[in-house]
Image 1 (cartoon, rainbow over the protein chains, first blue to last red):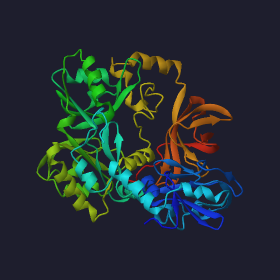
Image 2: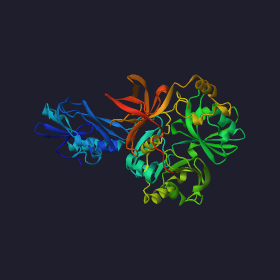
Image 3: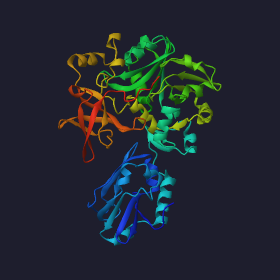
Length: 130
Length: 369
């Protein structure tokens, strides 16, 4: 379910890093909690974001959820296709529904994130207490 | 780990069913209720095009009995219950002396000496206390919520599905009327009412039959496109139909005139709580009005977003959401009465954006009969 080459945050974002470029999205758990996604608000290319900062939002029918930067960097690309097909976030959150790509400011920040096993354990604990 | 017990969360008799159906659950007014099962959009569309099944057992029931029952109902509510015939229901407001809403409710006249009130879940106990405190007529009042489950079946196929389980001729129950009859052998109050903008029924019965009736209706309706629906779809359906929700469009600071509910406010019927204040407000002029709006860009207004008109603060959003059937982003808001005309351009503050919207006539959605 959760790709082993991704890293995860407690706010349910994922990041996949290739070289110095990270692709960022929200997890399957996050899309399930949100329900039907109807709108995605993303930053413009060139925006500088820092770890933990809100860089966009994903809206479902019932609520809006802020998206936090998993690492610091500069936005190099945004997934424009989500503007017309936000529902992709419900069907392919770990793939086609990536949100942004960023040029990492400091790859050492990745060590502060969870791997797939740790994230799986993190959400299992949440589900057990729900 | 255990935490200290605060107020115990309440569960309807269908709680186990919701969990078995893997519904997403939420605390709503102190009740553990389903928000969605298969998804708000799918549930909303099922109700508009086929049927939706809703557990609304959290709603409260208050029964008023005795020779002074009508006198008490007339005293605490703003609509004219003397106009009801036995077997008829109407929408009304539970009023205080200020002419604002303690709650909104459905009043069912069972007989000259028996009225059955359906009130909001979170307000039930305070409503009961309020009615009791103003019971100078000496009517008998029962806080009867625990004696009833309530299931709503709504949508164009609701009548056909429900009819399979009752010999009561459902088509002869007119809108906002009700009958007593058996559904699958269970004694029910079968009301042709609802909160979705569709034709349909709300049935009230003893809680021990909840699972049996729910499962029968779900199984029978499934092949026709019926889906179990949660509070999420209930909210988007009522918003498309422009129906008020207590705590949003109406509350203890809102009068019926302001909320566009003049049609349930009848000072001509004689004395009731808040009547003087309401007459005064009408004479003086009502400063604000509830309006419907549509977003003109892709942003979605949410409850409590601020509204401005021509650069000046003008009001706030009471409910805002995507409208799944209309495929627009809509909402309701309070604005100054002078600015309430459809076509008026307004601006809504949504996060860092000032988003354009336009006032439109309500209801947003009206079913074709």
